[in-house]
Image 1 (tube, rainbow, N blue to C red):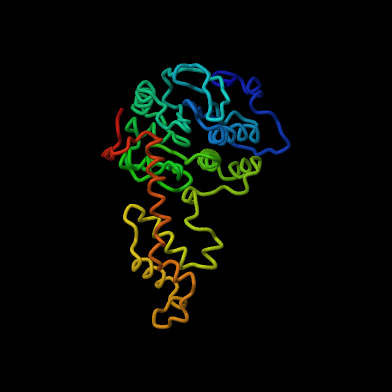
Image 2: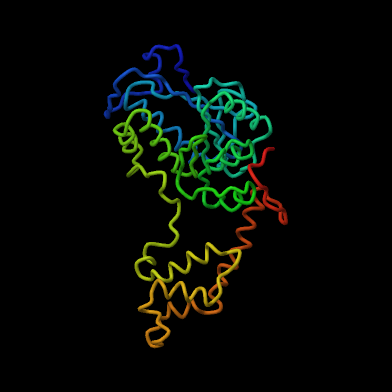
Length: 326
């Protein structure tokens, strides 16, 4: 059960900030920052816990109620996660104080939010309340028209569908803290995003201590990419092949020709792919120039389309222009 800190003495809040061996003093007056976590059906537990646990640990390390949180659902009833685990919540969609920051927690059903959720989020944003999203929660912000000019961070698997649905290019980085909202791609990226918020509120020393308590090796910056374009071993052994693969991924809808692939490879690895010296043409060079080298990328196109269909885009429909308001 969430403990509400407003109007209570610190001694009564110790249930959520148990004393540990580690301690990081926070000087000055403390005003509890409140978060409202909206759990949508089939939300992902990993992303949810990655966002909420750093707040608890910050309270524990400082021995002060720096953060408070409440759990919300669309109807006030328990919500089932994508793993089948059900959690109880504190409230339905009741009005919030302007100082409260809402974080939309979504998961495998990116379109789970109904009209009441979209209206609730718009009302909170109109009064100046903070808005955030984890995992596929950015879909809900986009449907509510709350993205503004800030592109959200979306998990790499959901990127193609998001692009088609909202005509917005999602960021491939771990998280983003923009002017109108903040968002993370899900998974353990929630830890990094919350560490960034904690550092903004109370300094880097506390954020680093929270990361250590989470056994999170290092706080990754927002611009770190979710997924490497090509494996590190390939980058070292065959940089030319890696360049060709990256270019092919960027041109799935219009596959590169045999000549284009050869040209990219040659620019990256001319010493081993010199057409004037046939004996120096390596096996890797011959493979990327082969007519069938594009087959794998062509096979990826229906896979990409199936992902979009599963996430709500009907086959044959055209991408919408601008944030879709539902």
